Amino acid sequence: MDIYRIKGGKKLKGEVSISGAKNAALPIIVASLLAEGETVLKNVPDLMDIKTIIKVIEYLGAKCDFDTAKNTLKIRVNSLRNAEVPYDLVKTMRASVYVMGPLLARCGEADVSLPGGCAIGERPIDIHLSGFEAMGATIDIEHGYIKARAERLAGAQFPMRQVSVGATANLMMGAVLAKGTTILENCAMEPDIVDLGNFMVKMGAKIKGLGTERITIEGVKKLSPASHNIMPDRIEAGTYLLAGAITRGDVAITKAAPGDIEALTAALGDIGFSIDKTKDTVRIRPGKVLAGTIVRTLPHPGFPTDLQAPMMALMTTLPGISVIMETIFENRFTHVGELRRMGADVTLEGNVAVVRGVRRLTSATVMMSDLRAGAALVLAALAAENGTEIRRIYHSDRGYEKLSEKLSALGADIIREEGGKP
Image (cartoon, rainbow, N blue to C red):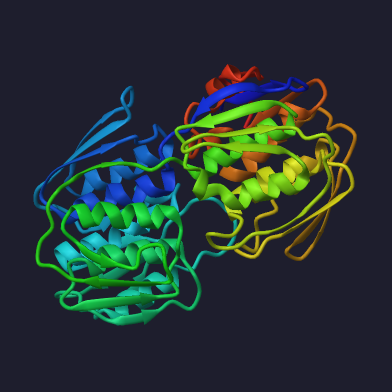
C-alpha cells in the first residue's frame, strides 16, 4: 500500500485550483441513466469513487469514456441491461445506493447491495426506502440486498424524519419520471443537491425549490441527455484553506465557490485569520492574534461535517481551548487517537471534543481511518516537527484529486511512496 511521507514546518504559499465536487459528480453521473443518449460532464474529478460509480453504471448498461486529462466524462445510455448492483461493485462506497432512483424510474425494479464506504457511523438508508415506499414501491431486504419494485413510481408528499443529502438526491432522481407531483420536505440544502437538480432540469425535469427545505417535482414521461459542468468541491476548497491556516501560510484557492464555504471562512475569521474573497477565489493569511473557537457541525448552510476533522487538526495548533460539537454522525472522531499520537491534546465526551492547543505537533507514524480523517492527518503532518509517515492513504484517493501534487505546488514537503505497510 502507498504511504505519504511529510516533513512539516513549511509555510504553504501560492494558489491551488479546486477540482469538481465529488459529492455532486456522483449523483449526477448516476442521473445520466434517466435518459437515453449521450451525456457530457465536464470538471469531473479523477477520484477512486468516481471510477467506482463509472463501473457501476457500466455494469447497468452505460458506455463511458473518461478523459482524466481533461476531466471530461462522456456517458452513452440506451436500454439498461441490469437492475442489480452486486456487492463487489459497491463495497467501498455508499453513493452506490443512488442507482435505486433511476433504476426504479426506468426499469420498475432495483436490486442493490447494501452499500459500504467510510466507517463513520450509521447513515439513514431507511429514509431512502421509506421515501420510495411513499411513492408506491415495495421494499424487501434479503441476503444483504435491497430489493425494490414499482410498476411506476407515483407522486407523493414525503417529509424526511431528518435531513439526508443522500435520500434527497435519490428521491429526486426517482420522482422526476414518476406519475404526478412529489413534494419532499426537510430536504438537504447542500450545493451538491442544487447542482444535481440543475442538471436534471437541463434534462427536462420540472423541479422547484432547489436549495430550500421543500422541493416540488412534477414528473415527466421522458428526459433527454444534457451537458453539464460539475460545481467546485467545497470540501476540497475548505481543506486547502485549512492547510494554509495550519502552516500559517498565504494560500489562495481558485476556481472555487466562496459562497458555499461561508461557514468555514466565518470560523477562520473568528479565529483571527485574514480572509479575502473575489468571485471565485479565497485567500487566507494569518492575523496578528489567533485564538481558539467553538464549532458545531450542521447541515448546510451550517459548518460541514466533512470539514470537522481537518478543522480539529487546525485547532490543535491554536492558543487556548477550542470545542467541536459533531451533530451529524455519531462516530466521526476516529482521527482523534492518531492526532494524539502526534502530541495533540484532545478530550472526548460523547459528541463533543475539547481541544487544547499545543506548542507544536510532533512526528509519528499514523493511519487513515476514513477520507476526512485522513485529511486531518495530512494537515497535522504539515505542521508537525520532523517527518510523519501516513498509511492507508487510499482513503484520501477517494476524495482528493492529486493531493500530494497540489500540496507540493504550495511548497509542502510531501512524497508519495509505493509499497508501505498496511
